[in-house]
Figure 1 (tube, rainbow over the protein chains, first blue to last red):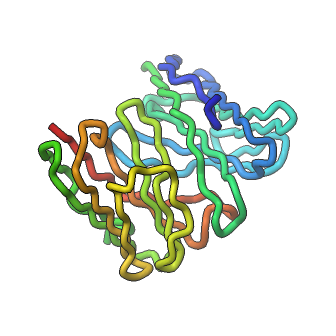
Figure 2: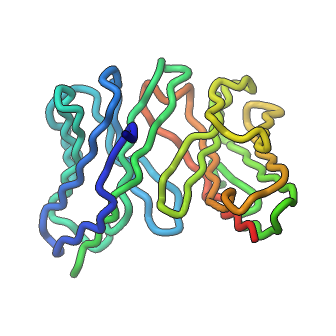
Length: 113
Length: 115
């Protein structure tokens, strides 16, 4: 079992719709969870972080965490063609100073005009 | 000014050769990393250095040898290149580990193709 799992997609949604991206993780002691966005041919960039159960909203993005189910999701409201990218879920393992980010394989999102 | 810069951006080489990738960050961060991203976009940590000290060494063949001359630089040398080494190698840095914010600042990547 992979430590962080995502559906590779592609996930295709029409412009203006809600895109829902999901991620599960295997290590119950994980405390920190992140979503990175990677445009084709570019490097990943952090877009959301979440540390406690529930929802966290930032503009059109909402991250959701359910530690009991070991599940993290990212909702993108009013999806735009510029949101088309690969979204990488990442989980932090270990202590603050020696922790490492474990990434899922990413979900490719296509937003069609 | 590029925050995390890697050179070269592209390498094409033959099997069996040795190659190096250099990385420099001007963010004043203490921790630097090498990640490998394969053709399926899977991004996997290889090494991490904190203030020149190796703190993470994943199960990576010993043909890969990182070197950190100072906390702003982290280089990667690869001996006896194999076809399976073809990937994009990303250098990244963070202020002090990834526990607090999880934010890694990535370089643009170095695409290695082994023929």
